[in-house]
Length: 183
Image (cartoon, rainbow, N blue to C red; front, top):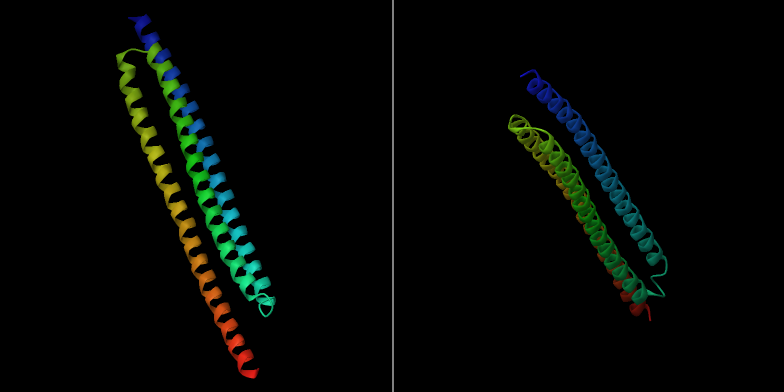
């Protein structure tokens, strides 16, 4: 009986140690994902600034290069859209890899624990598994909200860019009309 209690105590200690390691791995994974999302947001902001600079330059050469400027703005918008799609794909892939690593680490630790403990410890492992699933689900929900915010910002920036382009085209047509009228 004393040996059984000692084995259960050892199993409980091992389970507690494994739980701490799992929690630390999850914290590292969450930090890594958050860093990647921040980097992606910075990239989107830099891309937005690049598009703004392109529009300023296009306005300066509008009189002599109207068709070329329209082509460059259109090309720039397509590039920004492709970059955003690429950035979103990278975020999704990074999330998938991080979650797969987390699940693999959790699964490995759980296998080790199950091999060294009895049925009494299995109930505790099920509780840990549920907690981990809830934490992963919470993290995924937070990341989804962050991604939605980035996408919303892109839509806002894209709308502003489209409005500014329409304004530039309108000014160019007015300039062209005045130019024809004076000839």
